[in-house]
Length: 180
Image (cartoon, rainbow, N blue to C red):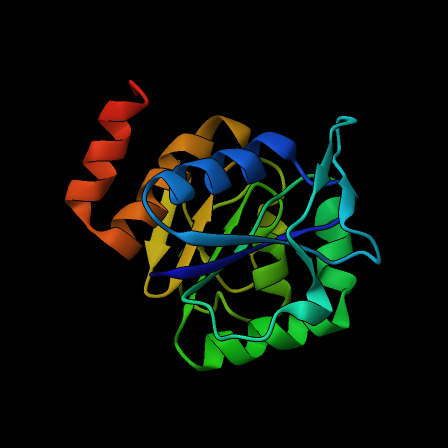
């Protein structure tokens, strides 16, 4: 079973996070919603509270994929979390998949992961994609880095992650099941 962690900080974009979690779980992924706060209850950017599966300090495996949802100020909180940025660096160096949507690809730019890689983000935040080959595609995949533009691209983002982890047939199956 594929192990996947999605990191939630206060101010995360609810639709980006939950669409991704939902579709990856439908595909068979063992998705852990991880709070980077001191509480399992994480406050979304639009007043929707989500109860995470675990706290950051409880993550003790090497997931197949790490995911960062966007939203403000959630993205800022992700970038400022020293434990998370250290974990992202170790996963990047190990060649594991890292995905980010909306404003969150700027965290990857800040960490230096986008050097000469294709990447996209929320419109107007492209300056945060340090040294990237900026695209305006709904989803950009370059090696182990997957980025997407925002709430409106959450379904294609999640389907791309499914294709990467579980194959094109599973992605097509989920796409058909959700009538997309």
